[in-house]
Image 1: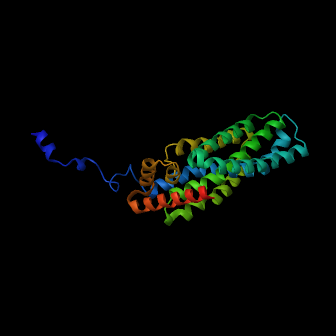
Image 2 (image 1 turned 30 degrees about the vertical axis):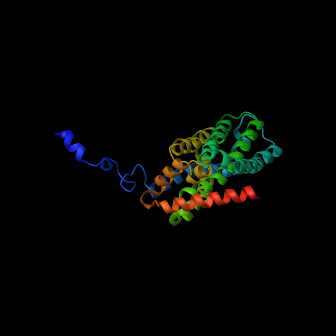
Image 3 (image 1 turned 180 degrees about the vertical axis):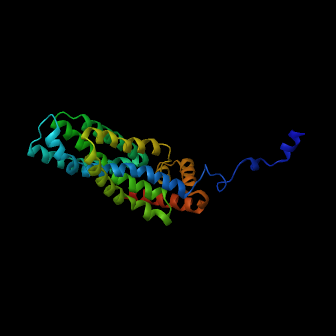
Length: 255
């Protein structure tokens, strides 16, 4: 009897549509969640930018090793060449490895940076840490706007991309606040929450559908677009994006 009833039910009824299946497409909610975890590494950049003013007076007085004025200048400026190299690296590699993967990769130098600062016992260790932080910031501040811009819909794209300056300002404020009450070691270890949190949260997010289409992975691109678009998914939009990317690739080959 049960078998007969099952046989009369259309097979399609066992599968939810894209609009019904929240796991397949949560739309704007997933876009907000992805942006939230990306913002962790933008806050990391703010922590790094504000670190010199917050910790250098403590570094001069409380550390077991001496920091000269010349070494202080290097500590303050080394993130800048690191950021230049990081942004160039991302420009070259983001179309090879993907936007999300480059953001995940940036968590590694950020993590090493905070560990080195926490246990530094010589000026050259701080040099390495600061350069790594600049490199990671260069990657982050070029990869994250690209990723958010490609996964978000037009209605909220400007707002989500505009969160970066806010996160940087918050990071600068936070690092100064932490160093008012914590030692350099404790503040550095506490800051590890941000790269680790970014990695754990973002690893479960899909890659940009644009990147998948660039790599001719249409099935993955379609799945990614459905997840990020949810009930607003439109096949015509998918075809339009696919056509635009093909035309852009064709123009590059001609050039």
